[in-house]
Length: 295
Image (cartoon, rainbow, N blue to C red; front, side, top):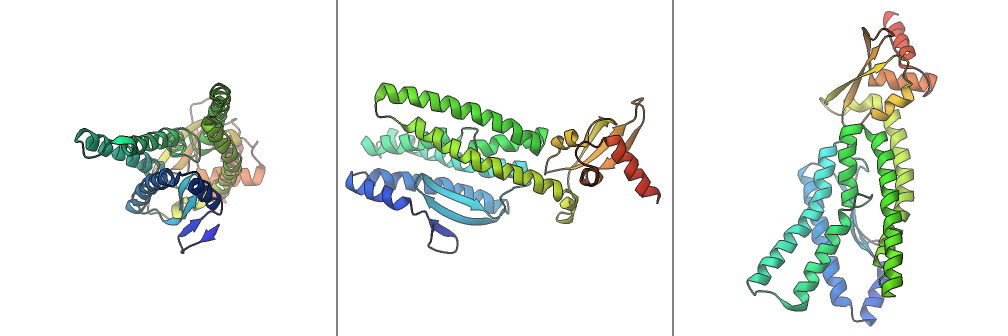
């Protein structure tokens, strides 16, 4: 990685691509693709700035331009979805503008076709529900909002595996038929490669969120609260899968008769897990919390 400015970096892998494009006469196509990618990423940047999300760097990669945020985890799923959708939205706008210019005979020919083709291709690929693509981030934000981060990470991993395997098989068949079109195989390989990194990253985030759960309210004035009701014999490790990073949770622990309940906070749940392990029951954590309160 070559540092150009404090915020802008260029991958060394870009230079072989530049040389190949130069000697094969593809400089115009390469410049067009990077220009479209730049507009795509600028929309991500504008959305992040509007939502007060700090940007760490912009990296020029062989497959496009990547925007990296200062915090690898956006703790508001709605913000994450908006920032992720901003890029594909830019492609939609460019497609519409190109279409209007074509109908008004302002622009036409091969360059217009290529401009629309690159935009449509970029739009379709980016909306795939796989990380680190925009569609994957939107899908993740939707899942986190409804079923919590840990459950969302687990579900998305399974969905991504199905998509990558399907694309790999389809790409292989397409390659055998056309003898030259390896685009789907390359995309599947790219997503498979990133799945390994995302797997480690998700596990790290899960552990970080568990450890830092008690600090959620320290950096904000208020936070949405969610109330969950669970039986006293449920294992804490099972319930924690329902937690997300955008809300503070209160658990109503129902007794054996299911008529009365004891409230424990998310922080007490985490402290109970740290002390007794993931297999501790909610009833035990509730008793521990009541014991601490009475002292």
